[in-house]
Length: 211
Image (tube, rainbow, N blue to C red; front, side, top):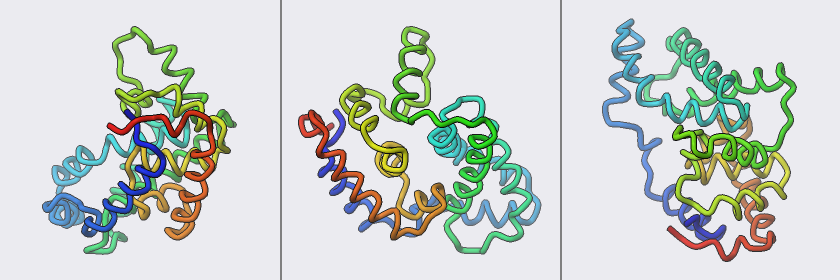
């Protein structure tokens, strides 16, 4: 089951208090250094490590499988071209997700999509029922009581829905969420707190059990 809002808050705090610099794989810094020297296989491994979170982050913004896939692919190409500007020793994933988010936002603006994240997820779940394919929202919300949470998220505005999705469904850190949303880390923290308060006020959310 999905955790209650207050349990989400405690989990995030515990995760942040124990994490190191992005908790990235021990060999990631070496892969980045090799990729910066022009080793294609090293960059292919970086893509393999981050392709799933890149796609899901793009999907949160675009609400479209096709647009998310294109945004993620283009972001990896642009990140590769910009590797020389990446600061050695810095966490790689927030840097990458910022590029992914920029690409995804460009596609959303171009397509004129303004549908709410939760409503889009519900429609996608209905269309994929029985298809055997794992849709993005199924991957994000697998095994949970989706209806209750989706109804609560649908009652929030887009900004609240997006920050909660990044923080608790995609499990991005505050720094990664800030990169994806194009805002400061402190803004993510305050926005998350306010969104959780609004989520708590939704009828039925308090009864959603813990995993």
